[in-house]
Image (cartoon, rainbow, N blue to C red):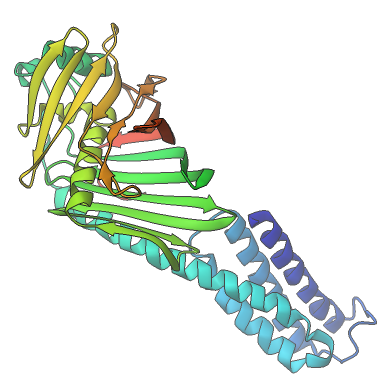
Length: 363
């Protein structure tokens, strides 16, 4: 769909060049019967360049393509009205461009809410001093967790205040087949903040989503075309579910944070431990499973709420494909699974693109 619209808008922009070329006496097409002065010819050229620039910015997924698009459609439609006899059918293309501009503006505005929250938390933590995480910080942890932290390479490196993670992912539901999405998220661990933003294509429509976990609240909003709400969830159950998700992030994406004083540990056997994590008087539990190499290979919790079925369901995230990411040995792949009575259902697959710690500015 993106390529198709790029082509349609691009052709629309190239057609505007005909007005410029005729005004300069370079062509004399039969379709253009009205005389075009050189002054108007330059306007046709400017409109063409604005439309072509918009099409390229749209193809390259720049959020602000709607700004040049708005200028383009205003100038283009002015010229079309002035030369209505020859150019009236260009209005159809401008209506398509105007619809694209509306979607672009809505997407930009929706994402700005996320950006505002990220920037506010970055400004709050930018002056925070980070100590070096040492073996002494690990003494209260079970042996399996100590081995995991040593394996990942977080020891003798700065403690983690925040993290920025990007994913390529696939998701589905019981009523929706797999669809691709791109994810960017920031986690802040001094006040337990999780800001998760996604771009997806669902049934051919661009779709955006924002999960916000801050203070004692959690909410999720999903919008098709950045304008049409298709899912909204909040409340106590959502906060408890997202507390599980935040702790999962700590285990999966930021293992240095597992020294947190709000985590209590219980050893189960040679390959697993139980962890309880508390935030805002809400306590959730999870079982962490490790292999012989010291890698965390699964995270299982019975405290996560399924907003679709509106009930608490066992949740797990098997992990694998460990690799070096910016000097740390971390999982590069994870799945999200609901364990329903009728059997496990994999609803998410995540491939980590990048993980950064203690970031001070938004990319």
